[in-house]
Length: 538
Image (cartoon, rainbow, N blue to C red):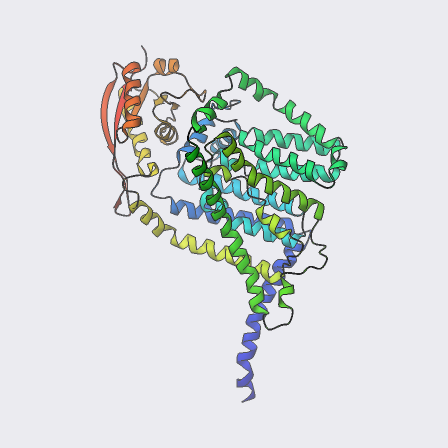
């Protein structure tokens, strides 16, 4: 009788003990200086593998985004710049695709490798600001941030900044603490590396500069050699790229002025509001899920007196390095409000994607609040939430892909079967001219996928674009021959494309081709292409 009465209670106790043991184990590994880094590396590796698998399933009905194909095209040659942007994102893609095959899955692996590497660097930042338990909590928050999963599918210059910008912040915190010549050198090289990714990083460099000027301990830092060595090192490291800029007559700035200048104040305000709303919505995901993890602690201990002190207390907190926390708060605040204000002041079209690399400090800024307490159960809860969200998304990915295709039967260029067109055009060219297809002429969202998917990987020319990537030229196209492609769906692009072909491809053989992809029995959008075959010069 007595055995039957206490067995269920024993089993319940063991189940509770299992959760407690798991929470204790995770907190102990996260807090241990010998295992903390390896735990983060293992977590980042698992995140990269799981989300690569998710993206492969989620994007199975699509071609890669044109930005991804563009990065691949840039990586075919290691130049000092590519017309629109500095070269680092292209260099990374060039090295990557010399190791991995040119395939959809490897682009998703590249993107997830980028964001997961950033998770490790963000942990290295966090341990300079908070204790190791909070640092790991901030990393898991970042893994829940859609930029580091769903929105991180597209490797381009924006996503590529997620590695050099955390390295820049890490170098700054190191220089602010050590104030030595060596730390200044590291900060200068980090600044140059970031600038070689995209000029947009001047927002972060400016934020770091302002943070150094506003910090209560600014005099100690500014009187040291570190900031001045950093500035000199960055300028010297940028000399080769600055020479290239002068040689191409500052082409990236021509591109920015032509594409992003706005003449309508109403449209300018609309874009700024959209930018703010978009990024707040993305940040709400990790913040709300992390609050749920903290709420779990309150619910578990709600019967105990002083339960709120487990998550919020005004007592002293040795877990936060306040001077470095001030740096993080200042940098994130400046970089959050500066770009929208700048866009309003200069009437610039601010894209929502420009926020991709700017908010990686938000989780750390929150966990560095001294009054916040993070019990080990909260660390376990937020990690469990990340795992549950990830596995649920992995299971749902195939059905999401099917629904997405069904809702994009008439739009979304990634569904327009450009990969099939690239392979068919390669076969036609090789059959007719018995040579490699070297040049494609088309709008960028058509030309770049041709470069990526064709086995010949032709270099691209975009009619009417002044900011040439430098990968080929019109003279080379005339010598080697080219294929011109005009999209017949959109008259505003079709007319100038056909005008360019009439001028430069007068004797071309003309074809009309149709592509359409089918996925799981569902048809994608049908697209008609006007194709111009210009043979190699004799």
